[in-house]
Length: 107
Image 1 (spheres, rainbow, N blue to C red):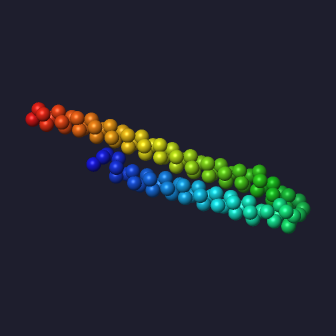
Image 2: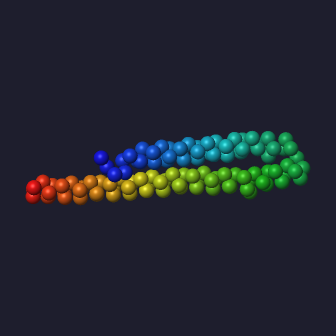
């Protein structure tokens, strides 16, 4: 059995969870954008409406997009780390197999 095999499945589940969270955030951003359309089309006018629209455009949506990028970035880096662990595990298995083969020849 490989050294890291027992945690690989758990890491893959976490990567999938990060992807689902990013998808959820993306849907929220799309809902905010579509929900704001009536306001942007004049359903609400005045200083309060302008301040609200500005807050959405300048802060809320960009910060949500940053959150999505961070979640996806973390999930991607976690996937990269998993690949490194798998490669290291294969290398260790190869070395252990070679050493075991040498001992079998000796004994």
